[in-house]
Length: 627
Image (cartoon, rainbow, N blue to C red):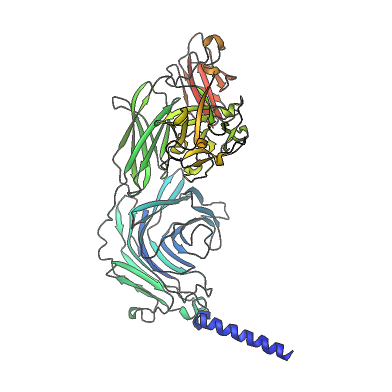
């Protein structure tokens, strides 16, 4: 027993010696680097706060706050938890005004890779975390922009990487609108939130801060009137031997303030025995920030069934969009319709209203988050006569199987597969023209072939989704050998629909894949087979109540909105011998009879399944999309 105890003791001593060699003795002492603040005072409430940061030293469990505002905070952090996609994250959070009273914060928008969720501990609310993957020695400019609408205060977070000028909008959160906006003051903050030996106060963290601005409610830029640094007092129990491992000041070379804590850091003599320091004004801040106003890059528009869809892109190196105005002008330059929204992420506008045949102009203007108004950018589009209502089956040249919707589903997100030939409507497709490309719409569901999340990754499974006419629903039919086509995505990589692994099995899912040469592989080629369409059959074969074709430029009938959720308004120029309008399915089956009058009729379609229908009055027909 004695020998066993001696052996055990020697083992413990050996491990202890090894740990001592690997980590300096001081890392085992209790202590996180002391929390510290750089507080800026401003004269008035702000709708925008802007601040730049460059992190030059960091370690895990470090938060570099750049902004503190009404009920919230935002900044960069380095965390040992990389489950959100990176250890170098961008965080923006908003506390509830009164959790116990049921007054909560909310998420209004998040980028596709931004996590949002409830948090608690030092208060309850919503947090957003983005795997931004910031890097050392790079300047970043973070902007918090607010606006009020519908009794809510919306707070959006943007960040600009100054090495490439790319802007990114991570999230928009909201709370019931208080009397103020973002508040007047601002606060930068360094926090080592965990004293674990692997990332405690033994590790140095340092960052530079500059160009801290407020944009007040009158739209005037304001500089801070005073700046104060403070290291938290009374935290000796938490900080241990690192309680005075802090320093701050103004660096003339960087024209920036700095904060540093941890390791062997010591405060400058100006601190004396204290923990606070007043800092001078930034020398070269100027009287207003230098801003590149937002720029609209492209505008396009399409018209179908009484609805105009206007889409645009912005230059991502210029001021980010806050609001947008989309307009339709006729050939004489008269504005026919306007849609204006304060939605930073919005890049399309759907405007209902029947347009006569002719050429029209879509015009888009944005106001950026700094209140600069862009130059207007235009795009022309043409409204023609009756659309092609031909239905097609689409056969793979290798497998001789036909493109269809998985399990004949009518639901959004159902995948696209290939099946043996049949008469089912899930195997039939309508080709709608958009921007010179085709939106491929299924006859059974009325939904379009769609790349989920606008994915351009090889192997992505296309789905069906409610028709939105976006680029991820647009396909180019590229003619190749043998009378076949490549069905090529209109997104930038131009991948094509592919029979995965050249399968000949019915039910095999279709994938997106790079084309094999200019003609594609045989498994990437598709043949169009026209289907006899009862909706465009000869009048002698059609029921008198069956619509013969869809006329988008109706003069006797208009409906709004379209697409529709629960109900729409039907406007008709009533004819004495035509007291009713009719809704038909794509198969030509009568769904609903509508009594019309000289005043608009409100038509309830809440019971209809999502998909495409036809509304017919007299000799005019409009396609209706039910969502």
